[in-house]
Length: 160
Image (tube, rainbow, N blue to C red; front, side, top):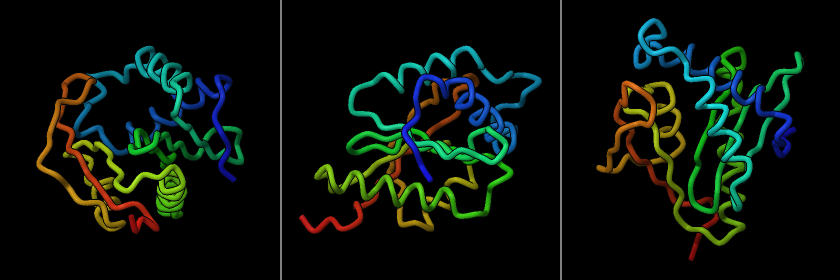
């Protein structure tokens, strides 16, 4: 069951994001050249948890670690990560559905997210779930600053 993250989850959020990145993105962020930015990611999570209007949902794993995080505001899926040991179990799809319903409840009609161009696994999932790539691109904040691309999607139940 998803629950709201708290500041007590900071270290677990860092651990989850590191595990997912090291499993999926070493071709983008080779760890020998670009070590995972623990301090910066931890500081970012502290800011996200404190930001008004942002919800951070997590799923606790059986081992005490987090299996999933989904952070969002009224219109943007800001972060989504699933622990690699739980890949292929439908957690990301279920979390996205939960987020889209929450956005719909807030009156939003279009959702957006940013994804690394080279995050092929995530892009396949988003496109399968109906997200559409736009032409918008921007550099990612972490070295080597790979390109991120924007996706949009109509929100579930939106008939406005």
